Length: 227
Image (cartoon, rainbow, N blue to C red; front, side, top):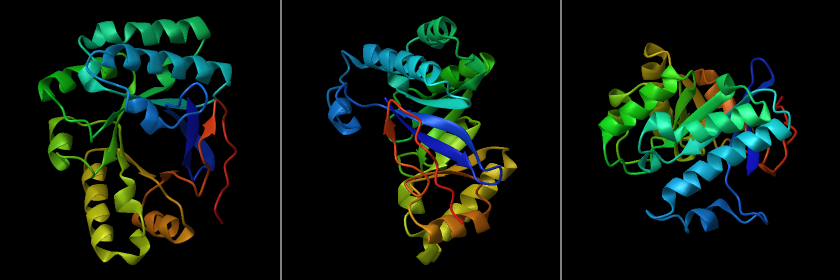
């Protein structure tokens, strides 16, 4: 795993580190994910969760760890989470500091199944997030089905938002919906100061991107705070 911080710019603190899959020799996420298929999806998903928790504990992570999960790999939510809970207990990492992200890009076979997963995770005290929001096939329809604790604006909406009135209008609308539903918003893929300043003006408080830190392999990278 590599880790990239999600920062709270008002508090100037790291809110969470996202665990990003890598090969054992640092191979890219795309090269690893290309090897995932229906036969090995469950084992892969479980291994990623356990490794993320193990490394978070080893690195003395002082905040949340955000773990991507594959909803189509989860059969029974309570059963599938067992290995994660055992890993957290074994390595001494508090389960209350776990966030589980679902990517909007993964086609959902059964939305009722996803809602059962989210309900179980919330019952267990975990936070949940929709990753890449605005990039997938379902958009606001997915948000209507269940309300996570967080959404992450897709980087395609964030890129050059300071010069694009259409993107600004879309993000304003998403922020309004999220405020009404008490959902926190993370802007991911932020790379430039103009993007950052515009998003701050719109009310975004949580950020992730190269402007702050690049992912670091099995380490917690230092954060660069914009002026």
